[in-house]
Image 1 (cartoon, rainbow, N blue to C red):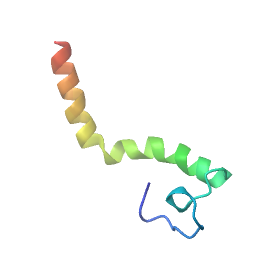
Image 2 (cartoon, one colour):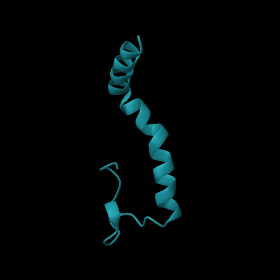
Image 3 (tube, helix red, strand yellow):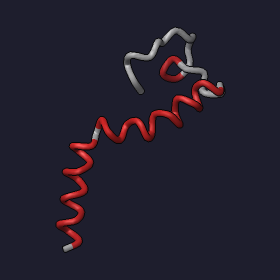
Length: 54
């Protein structure tokens, strides 16, 4: 959930109509886009996992 997205729907989860195509599109869009934002944390966790694997 990105705080910069407008929250102007009434009473729906996170301000979105969860049944709408727009909501599903945003959900699909968020997944790949979130990777670069968290790349630092991901690389850190990946390093830990690789260290555990040996």
